[in-house]
Length: 108
Image 1: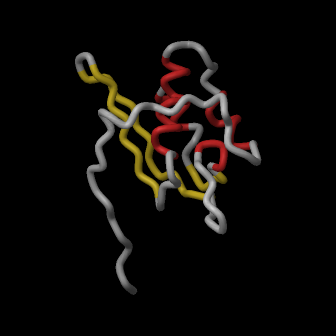
Image 2 (image 1 turned 180 degrees about the vertical axis):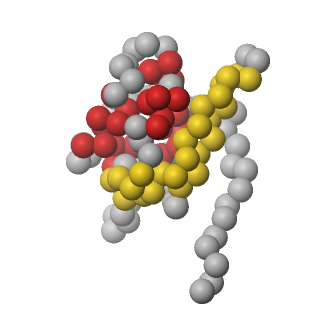
């Protein structure tokens, strides 16, 4: 899953992983996507310049499919070539996901 996460880093159009909103861009800069196993849980730690609606849950769902060996490591990054939402990307349930911090750039 970590190898798949690293392939998603950078600025991309994440339309395959987002619910589209009229007039809103789906281009985002994914700066960090770490995956770590801690006892009986798996932690996903993501940092981006912004997230689209449902983006984190969809990205986590895609990595779970890789971890369960239902999809190859390259599959989540290959979805970035899509021009519409990927219906075959599973969306992780909201329970268990925690927003830790919202950061803003300096005013200057």
